Length: 344
Ligand code: NAD
Ligand code: UDP
Image (tube, rainbow, N blue to C red):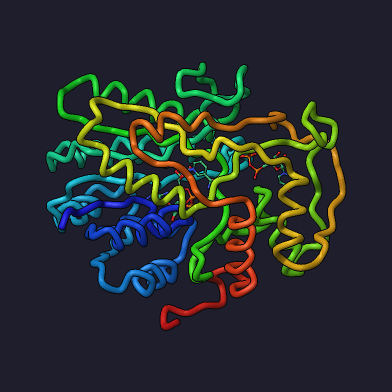
């Protein structure tokens, strides 16, 4: 069995990817400091993929001996690197924390990979590296330029990976630029569990649906889009997880550090999402149109052709699947993992 070391494997996208990897016959070694996640997610990953082998190291990427212990469990064939802080507003207030955690954490990870002769990496980048793109759909060759410290950590890590790949032969890296991940595993057992007031649209909509919040504030109704609200490329997290398996399987054909968009190629507006969620939930989700959110772009969606050509992967789940699965998770876990125990 090949072994993948998965950093951030207890998090939202990481936990879904662990299920897909285990189901595909990979052994999984998770490294996560649980700074934004719960060990309960991993217990549920084991429950969803019971025949797979998953071990867990509660370790920070900056903890060199801890990381060594995780690699020593190998031999590790490939690393899937999700671990990072991701809140844009927080990154503006605490930039050094973001650079240390995300950029320095990745430096430590790459050094550990070098020590252990591991040259295969799948990295979580983001469409935020495109900033406000001049052309949509966005291709991987579009100019790069992030608008906030979080986005710049992704940009700098991408540059660093290109430098490392160029410095010695043998590195095979895919830099997966995710668009807007939403949804949850169809079992309703794992899903996104944001702390505090959600920043992102889908968890906010679902917390309104479950009665934790009164209404959704739509950030701007006067964009140059068909209905005036912002347009994004929402992608089901299980499709995204499958994209990581496809990326691992395609590394044989990769040379150096190659960016790949993971999106559906479809743009949906905020109102489209609110309406689809209302239909899935079976009642109106209240909303009000407020001012634009600083830093937001009007519309962005992916050109997903590279993923099809290089990875043999396309997204297959619809917006209705995304809201239905996200709702199942939210309705059966109204407090996220908060009130669950490791026993069940
Ligand atoms: P998440 O917060 O749910 O998962 C990240 C995980 O990394 C958490 O479990 C956290 O505890 C862990 N972690 C953070 N810093 C760590 C460190 N120093 N050492 C060990 N573990 C650490 O986030 P997610 O939504 O699953 O995102 C995963 C990755 O994808 C992140 O790198 C994120 O920037 C990127 N990404 C996310 C989105 C999105 O909208 N969710 C979009 C584009 C890119
Ligand atoms: N949005 C909104 N209300 C919210 C959160 C988000 O109207 O409470 C809008 C936001 O302006 C953008 C879209 O929903 O047009 C997606 O925002 P999100 O924060 O989920 O992702 P982003 O694309 O900003 O990374």
